[in-house]
Image 1 (cartoon, rainbow, N blue to C red):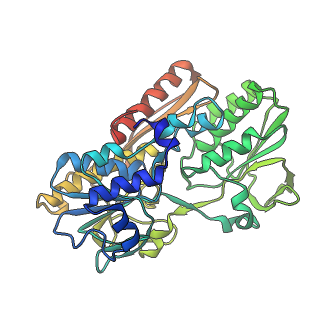
Image 2 (image 1 turned 180 degrees about the horizontal axis):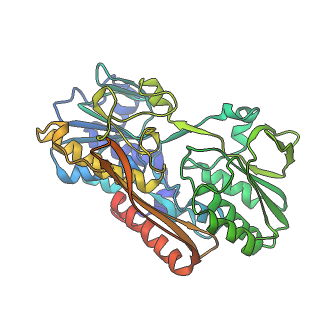
Image 3 (image 1 turned 90 degrees about the vertical axis):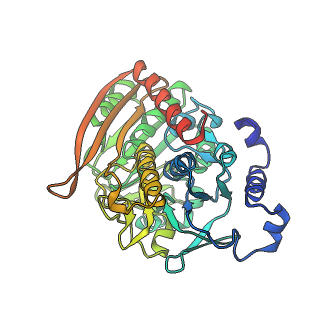
Length: 428
């Protein structure tokens, strides 16, 4: 089934059917029986992964290749939509199926896919409660992504359903519809203080939506209310693009911390610069780890790992990766999650083979982040990280930066994305 066919069909039904087939009982039994224990007791070496994003999917694929474990993924969405490269979709440069993938390759390799929501984790009993029943584990990999701190902006929580943020999968579809219906006027994009998912993401979105307005002759202006005093990554490249390509379409305002929204009056309130009117607004609130992290007692806003390994502090049977980690000085990015997925899979494979955690090689992730500033030109930043044994901390060991927008960088960006998607899904 290709991506287009998959999107046209009943995606959730297809995914559940695949899951029930893998589980060894009929769809009707799974759906109506409401078994309190979906898979029975674990017989050892069962790895349960919560979250089918950049981190969780990578762990699953790598563990399936290494063998020795029963790999179970719990993911509430029936297929995957990539946040990296989603700004190309929002601007109409790429179709939705460019960033959309199904889990069929991993399922065909033996992964058990439970298309349900993970509700609770009982770490004492090593059980995950889902919306369809319980699943026990020997090792748990937690990579659920982020949640929004709607309460950080007065009035936003009440209207969040009307103002899609677009930093979680599937929200891009609703945000794209808003953009398509925008006929002109004042368009506000707000950017919070870090940490948040994908530091360059909002700045790329500004450039790509300015390109969209300019390309389609829409008489609008994007006002960027940035709580920071400068773009957090590739600042010179983004500011040059705003000035040189979109001078009539973008006004960048630093140190503009959005603290309130009045949707009825179509205004946003800043801490120090007064109110701004809008016809369309993309408000990006502060972020935190997915709610199941707090439920499991693994952290308040973020979760910490027991450096230099990726196990949770105080629980060696739980591995944490991706955007939820709070004490690793790296960006919250798709490639970081993918890189950590490879590391976690190796550490788990060692544990399953009988090694202690400390016998695993110490590795830290690497990152490269491409951003488009128009339909075909890109800029990028990269970094490698390593463990400083003498000081017991994570250091940046190498870095790179190219803020000169070029079509060559745009080509590299597409190749980079397809390579990572291929690693996660087996095809791109």
